[in-house]
Length: 285
Image (cartoon, rainbow, N blue to C red):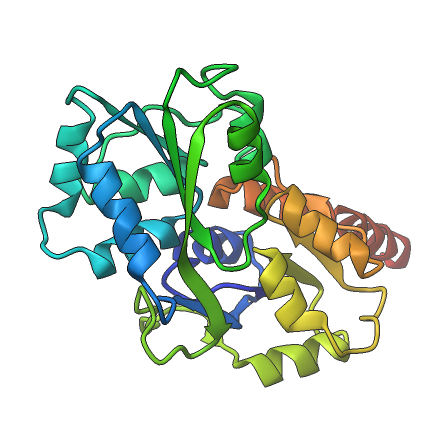
């Protein structure tokens, strides 16, 4: 099967899959790097570090954390943001999910809000702590170049003074200057380049594909004939599932983006194949 992530970032997931007996390959397809113009992102970091009014910083991926780290003037930037959480006016930090919250904590930034159900922009909005912003309250929304404007638009509708910034952009792997190096270790699964992954996918060589972002769905499938029906598809969340459905595929959607939930989703996706194989073996015995 194929996991559409690099070896380091997918290591926990691929370990779980290999423990289940699956033969796993990985293909990053895309990597994150800084945009050419980082002025807007630097402005967001400055506003977060020294809020003049109550301010929310929304962080919707670990890549945004690494992008902020890459443009920060010193290694104390995370501690500076965390100090702003205790200041008056106060900075509050919202993370889209557990992995993003973990990345923030790795750089010393505490988290004030994470949705308990759906880990997406929609999930953040559904559980947002307040229905309306207080007068003058700011929301900072750094995100991928490919990100929908839904989060920023909805916060503006709720009365926030919204500032957006492109934090990173996804480029074909290998990126010239990736935000996070993703080198394989000796016992990691084989790493496929994009051409190999697309070719093997088109020929139906994967029993299952774990799709980890809409952009990676596009990188894997766009320009190809529809994949053979024998391939099962697993989506990390609803936006990725929607990208697969737009291409005529029916994915199993993980309950959350964690490696454990993705591994369970793979089992569910392949359940009918296991039953068919078991039934055939019983009939032949």
